[in-house]
Length: 166
Image 1: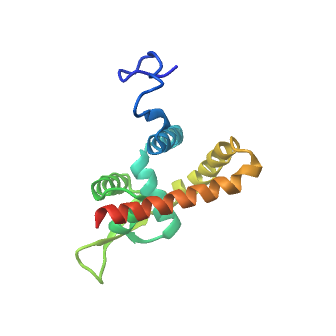
Image 2: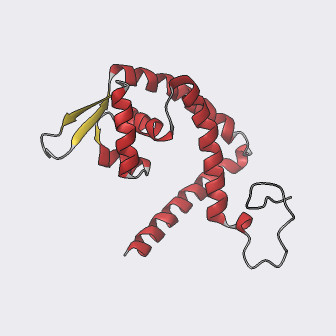
């Protein structure tokens, strides 16, 4: 049974509806991404008191070491205001440090503090286990095709974004 816009259960959409949101690939991918993000965020919110943007900044810096906020945003696909808020929160919690970029005084270089590195090191195995449990839903023989499909969808979306922005 489908859900009506108010969130309750309603009648199935007419079979001749000109557009079915439930079958629209961008919508389906967004729903899956949101469900996965919510499930994972419960883990790091409960244990570390951080949200999705903070987690993305933390793990990006844990992976790359030192980056500008602009580079973190580009890598994690987050808007600069979300990155800025996440950086402020992580800095207040003493998980992240900023220092002036001597090559460009207008920007700061971000890095994890020892406390930030410690959380990152504890989060990595938890995130890896979560990803493992998630991928188990896909038959092992189908996983290479799934990975190829994700790569191609990402590439195609990137091209469409550039084409639409031109």
